[in-house]
Length: 151
Image 1: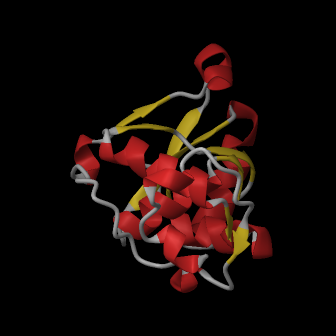
Image 2 (image 1 turned 135 degrees about the vertical axis):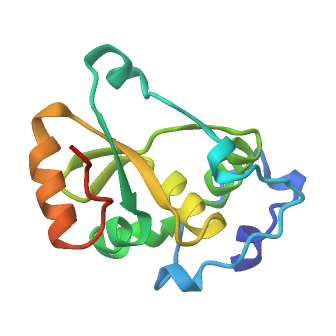
């Protein structure tokens, strides 16, 4: 089953495979899809529907530190979803991962994993509700996980 994470055969695209739990980020097989990925700076990030209405703050965070703070569930991946997320990245349009509590992704774990794997060392943009912004900034700076905001 692990090989499905490097490259997903087309015949599996419309099946249900369930999730696979990896022990760590480094255990996830490296990408071998036939996709051509854009430069990170060329990816267009779009707002999730709820944030398009309510707004939020974009922060740039260390994807791996966010994922590690989520414990075991961070590396529990559905191969079909994993493939779809990589295809979105290859197409150059990705919805911002959503952070709903300090350093916990509510929606966008596969996106965060894929972006972190495909663009090592890059800070990942995530959207945070206005009500959590200060707490996320404080926690992120303390954990050396975000780019310090410039005022």
